[in-house]
Image 1 (cartoon, rainbow, N blue to C red):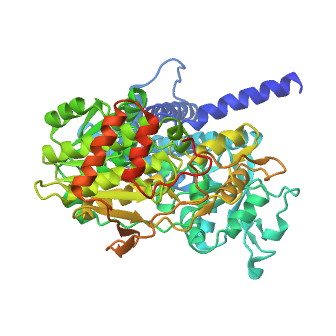
Image 2 (cartoon, helix red, strand yellow):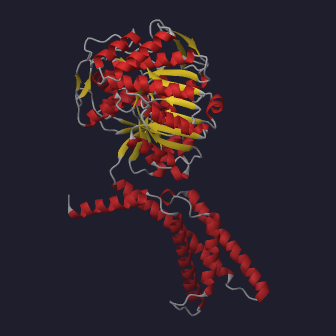
Image 3 (tube, rainbow, N blue to C red):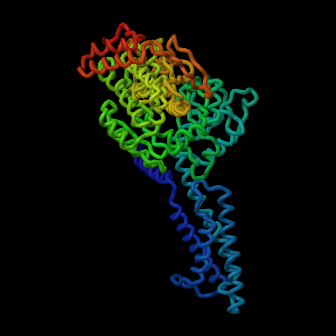
Length: 635
């Protein structure tokens, strides 16, 4: 690369970076005023030259300042400076024409009034007309130059070639909007549609391609742009086209709905977002009973344990629209809780957030928190969840997952909380690992408390599968492996899991929490189980690479306590439908009487306090008889 070329690229990159940010409106206004002054000064020069009046270069008549002052006032009132200059269009030309014409009209009226009062005009009407003829082109040419410079820089900047998926009115409107914006990251080269009637057609001078014409080695385009509405339709009806596009090594980007991005202040290619694995899940939007949720959560003091975790923090975010008075954020992790509190500061809400560092297994500390804040509703999401880790640390799993729940639930009763909702897991069904067994034991204790008649607290349990993108889940783990060039490690080629997005799961937790009457286990419709191997393949394709060719997949064998598949209901459980299509009530009964259950709980607590893992697990097996360890279990 030659030095001049190198410097040119550096210069263009710098200018492009500058233009990517919107220029302050005050700066644009100042430039417009300066241009108006230049127009008035040129008018003064031209009129002096034609009429033979003396012209002094450094002498500026007061009339120039008066004309510019009126022009500036009208610009400020009309806000002609408020548009994004680099996206100027004929509408902006019309706006500048209106402003200059209005200024001329006002000045002519002032001139006439001046004549009636003083017997002479402060400036000739012809001079004002000449000023208007000069001012309008100057104001608009400034915008044309900025737009032209920006487009030249964009052309010289590296861009990805993109196709619009579809040729509907909505797709064409999106293309038109994007072309006007001249985005820095993409240049539109055509449309993609498989209908025979659209083949060999052109829209805006760009061809319409069919899927067959796109081949990995024939680089017609690097990316596909799709609007959110069409993406949702494809998720419901046919995701094969998305997979086919990914197989052709095309990146897929989604754009928000038209009403979201057509606003001038937001019109930019930067609004495009690359689709992720969550977008490929076939999901229908969740419909919440907002009136019911408002009646339960509005103006309440709500405690969320495990508030800094993936589920807990999303529950907090989902609660905000229902306007509780106070949310108590309880977690033992200092840094994540601090990060969440910083995020909540920017929510501009009147809700009071209380940040509490505490461990749920510390009964005295949690009693202090209940005494201080008196929560009316408790969402208990604090738990240890990693199966292999808990297999090696059984005492910790029992201590947090069971006794932590024991503490918070009993304190909820003692301090007369209205509702207590336990966040459980599908691993509690016929558990094959300690983590699942401890969550099942927590479910049993909640049902036991619910059966008591000497308190006012309504208990409920929510049970769902894996949450995409949560801390420690397979998705971020695979992303790291892909970023490192592979291989991706999968425990077994046939292993399957239920998946749900974080926002889906937490919306349903709030809905289930509102419909609880006492002791129910709410089971969420997780859709169909997904093979982890298929998930790995899709994530590799999303990264623009080919499974096995670019990124290898290795099978490592099932980990201690790991199942090939998960269940949402035990064999002896049956379900009842609720008013929400995605929430069922699972009916599970304990094999023990209340006295027997409490006796086993006391034994488990006594052994746990001695840190004797083997004895503690034996008691846990008595409490959860369906707990059957796998052959590769750690115990």
